[in-house]
Amino acid sequence: MPRLAALAASGVTTVEVKSGYGLSLDDELKTLRVVRRLAAELPMRVVPTWLGAHEIPLDYRERADGRREYVHRLVHEMLPVIAAERLARFADVFCEPGVFTVDESREILTAARQAGLEIKLHADELSAGGGAELAATLGATSADHLAAISDAGIAALAASETTATLLPATLLFLGKRDQAPARRLIDAGVPVAVATDFNPGTSPTTNFPLVLTLAVSQLRLSVAEAVVAATVNGAAALRLADRVGQLSPGFSADLALWAIDDVRELPYWLGTGRCRASWTRGKPCHPRDLGLAFSR
Image (cartoon, rainbow, N blue to C red):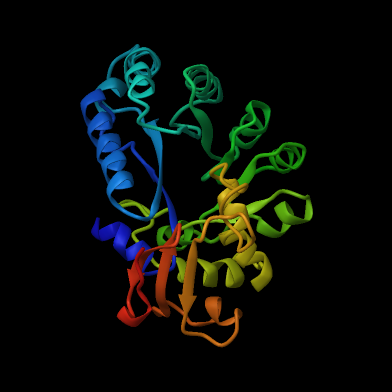
C-alpha cells in the first residue's frame, strides 16, 4: 500500500503489478492474491500480471533437464490455478537470451492465452533475441523494454497492434549507455508508451514525472509524445484505451492535478513532486492538498 500511495502521489491513477519474484506456486499465488486484495480495497486501478516466467530458478538451472521441468511447471501447475482463481489479467515472459528462449516463451504464452489470459513480453532488453518479433506474431498487448530491438523487430511491431512500452529509468539505473530507439519506433508507426518499471532490482523509483523527463531528454520524445506515451498509449498497453487515458466524455474520471502553469513543466522539473492530487474513477487516490479532496 505505501508503494501504491507513492505512485499515486506521482500522478499515477492506473498501475500494472506483476508477480515473478517468488517463482514457486505458493509465492506466485500469494503475490497475486495480495494484488487482488489491494485492487479491491483501493480506489487506484490495479491490473495484475502473472510473471512466473521471470527467470529460471537456480535449483532448476543446476539440473540437466531443469529448464524443461520449470517450463512444464509453469504451464501445467501454476497457470491452471492462476487462471481458475482469475488472479491475473495478463501473462508475461522474460524472453531474452539466457532467460527464456523464443520457443519457450511461445509455449508459455500460447498456453496462457488458451487459459483465458491476455499476453505481454519482456522483449529484447539487453540483446536482440527475437522477442519483439514474437510479440508481434502472437498479437501481444505490449512488448516491454526493447532497448536492444533489431530493425526486424521494429518492422514487426509496426505491422502489428502491439504497444512498445519503454522504460528509460531502468537503463539509467543500470548505467547503460544506450536507451531504446524511441524515435525509430515512432517514425515507423509503432505506438510507444512509457512506464516506471518500478522494481527492486533495476528501477527503484515511483517518480513518474522523472520518467517523463527521461522520455524527453534520453528517448528524444517531444513533450506531446511523452504525454501521449504516459496516457493514451499507456492505457493501450493494458488494453484499457477504450475507457481510460484521456479526458473525454464517456471515459473514466482518472485525473491528476499539477502545480504547474504549462504542460511542458511536467518533464522540466527534474524529480520534484508537483502533483497536488489524483483521482481514479472520480475517487481520490492522493489528496496532498486536503482542500482538493472530495468523496461521494
